[in-house]
Amino acid sequence: MTPLCIIATGLKDAAGLLRLIRERRREEYRASLEAWKKNVEEGFSEEKVERLVGEDGLEPVRASLERSGMAIVIHDLTGTLHELFLPLFIANLLDELGGEDLFLAVDGASYLSRFGWPIDMLASAPEEHERLRVACYIHTEGLPDYQGLPDLMRAFFSERAAIFDLSPQAIETLCEGKSAAFRASLLRLLEEAARERLSGNMAFVLYDVVRAPMPELVKVKAGFFSRLKARFRARKGGGVG
Image (cartoon, rainbow, N blue to C red; front, side, top):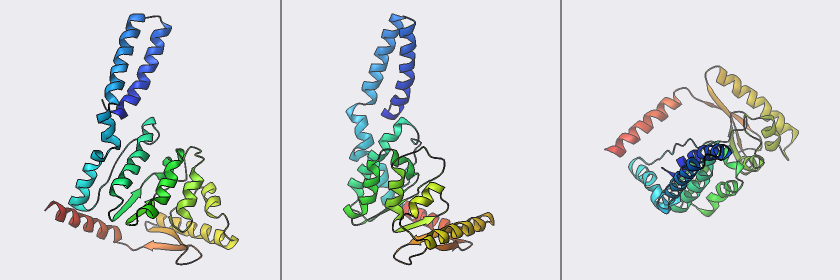
């Protein structure tokens, strides 16, 4: 049983133990307690924790990068107690692979803001690792009220952002210190981008303080994603061969 599994199992076992205590079923309680203790000791053994946050745990990522030039890590930890392992994994990845030419794209980064410290970790990573670039896909709708979410948005929206849509609260954060003209332009372009997507086209609003002081609408030409998929397939074939 892995550490991730033992957390969920442990919580379920805890409820069972409380029920047994209330019912004064002492023998079953003792047996359940011993089983729970054994699972915790095995699940959080030094060897298994090392696999999660140690250097050896990155071997599959290294192998994929060497083979095809990219690696995708898929998880189902968001919204669970297991989520605490995710920022530790990312921190380990940055420490071990940050010295290489690496582009790190973090999907669902909004959920990391519940912990606070991953915001600083992600925002400062390019400064600490010169050959590293970081992009975060930040959801702003349908989230718990994470106090750190505005700080995450400020860290990654301040200079450059590709925006598909924003919650009202996110719009306020992005427009802090900006002119009324900036806000009006942003809202107008978001509406235009939404109309383009409803028509079956891909469009988003780009904000890049280096290129221009105001946001702009970007339309992706038809066939772009087909060409991108073909490029990935060709790259993958070359890596395997």
